Image 1 (spheres, rainbow, N blue to C red):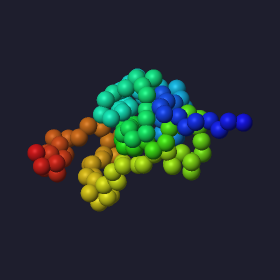
Image 2 (image 1 turned 180 degrees about the horizontal axis):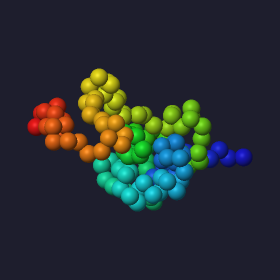
Image 3 (image 1 turned 120 degrees about the horizontal axis):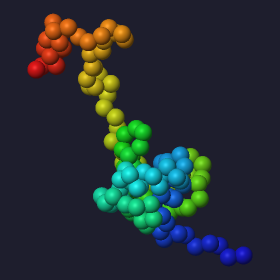
Length: 126
């Protein structure tokens, strides 16, 4: 029995699904069509080829994932083997203390009064 040769390239939607950057292949294809997937900086269609060394950026529910392809696969694999198929260059999220806290009103409190609006503007530095 012959050993199958490693893949040179595959469809971007299939690869994104196989390495678990998208939950389903349909969602991966929809992300491509919606302009949420880039390969080497270019927006791509679902059938665009992905090769070893390509930079793939996927914008999903959370922050944009930036990965470099190290192995091309077409079949979905477990989380461990999937992590070996790319190098993740996604920047770390900012520390919690650096995230600005938004002023929130109690639910059902209605619109702010003129005095409250001025206080909000003062807080925001306007």
